[in-house]
Length: 309
Length: 80
Image (cartoon, rainbow over all chains, first blue to last red; front, side, top):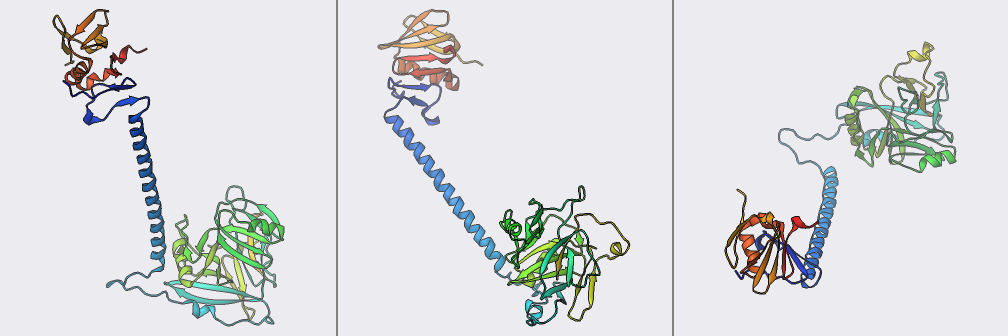
């Protein structure tokens, strides 16, 4: 009968709870107050330590994930890993073109992981954007392809778009961007970039599209269908366009660009959209469906092109 | 079955429903139990012993009682 816990006059406790179930005593202060405070501080410290451990652990996981991208896969007996066919050296070092050469586009075909690619490298030409009317007889153009997408419901250009310093639309529905400011072309992926403001301020151009490759790493995109794919890419400062000669998914196309060694790439309108390139001998390499241009088809007002002259 | 508190007073053995007890106050080596109907009983146990009896006999159901300091056990259902 004497083993009931002592209680002080400034304490209260609920009956019916044994000491094993927990000390349910509440006090206005004093020694037990210090004990509770100590437990509380210890609990907070434990939570903080666990939180920090989790944080640094997650950081290390990220590092390992990045490493996993870089490190080569272990060879498999039944599925030996084949190196991508068509290395960068085969097409990239095709020779420095003389500035005296007339503007043209170097056209070359290669095969990366069974995906046939056509590479268009403009020489002595400047990139710009053009909206609405495209003169298919314009001989100053050495490469042209559709650039930004147009919304099917209202005909507006998807994402931010700047032509010669004039902002036509704003928005970040697609994270990839391509900008030309002061003659320098920037390709990348960002939710916000001051290149838009720079393009407006300095009379440049800017458009947004699906990002395909960012810093040499594949970027996944939502559309899963297969189609003819096009992109504008940058590799060690050189800008060029790539087109698949077969219908491919976004993923496979982006992977082929990664295997090609591309640093950054954003999508261009693919499928049957029309365009052409003029090679060094003046031959015209057309792609897409030309007939709407010949038959007087009325294109959406905001149809736009990436043009090299 | 609903538990009752069985406690001996100076005169008899009382079997009382917990919700019938308003409070129990310490009175030296004895305790005073006040019922809902206003009747007061002298319990021949110290308050600490009454507290243990409540815990032993009622178990978790004894949690309607709160020990406040050295001299009072109250039924919290009567706190308004």
